[in-house]
Image (cartoon, rainbow, N blue to C red; front, side, top):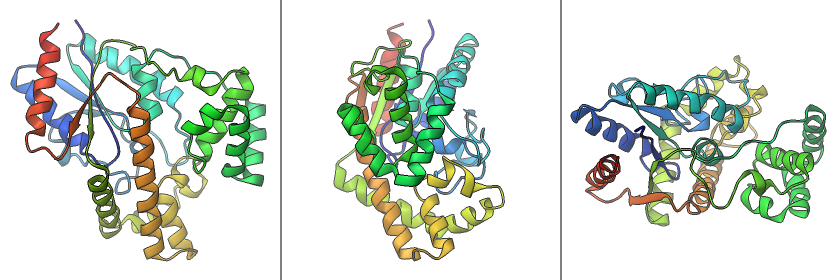
Length: 310
């Protein structure tokens, strides 16, 4: 019997540490486990501080996959992630390794764990929408989406231009609601134990604010400046990433450092709220409070109860 684990939830909740802890617990029982990254910003080489990417030492000897797989100018898509992550999971399982999917990129998690296929792309339509985006902005396009598919608009952040364009592309390409590709009742691609981390909203917001401050202290602006020659300004995904867009604006002198930090904190908090809104719809998730002192023991109990059933 193959096994699949997933550690999901909002940003800043300690998912990586729990995933590594689970891998060590399994190793203690003679079961090898490896982690598959599901944070879409950690795919990018050089984007380390702003994505809270663990370095080799912090990974504590646990193999991690799908980190640093894209150049800064590449575009990341959930459809492509599904194409490479599922065979990787099956390969690990065939070798007796337990895959642990870890991350909070909602659509990317769903693309692997749920049974749905992505609609295709239309280059001509995409070019038209991209031109419209440049001319009118993502908020105006989001209004167009709301008129065509109110349900889709409620799921897509109007300030996330890539998601707005993709949703519009799907609706116009298929003539069906965007939700047709994102079923409300997820059906599992294969059996999975999902562990979700969250806590009270006020505590998480405070934690995220401190995390943003720390990123600036650790040198996020210098990191972004070092990525300019590599083309971060031209990367459709990377240039708009939370924190990186604000650091670029600070380097350009259009906002101050205090404004960059405040805006990043605000957007990060908003993103965490959207993550919870998304994940809350998935009844398969076993939620744990990251503030609980016995969090690791609770996670361990869930994992071994799951493994014992097979």
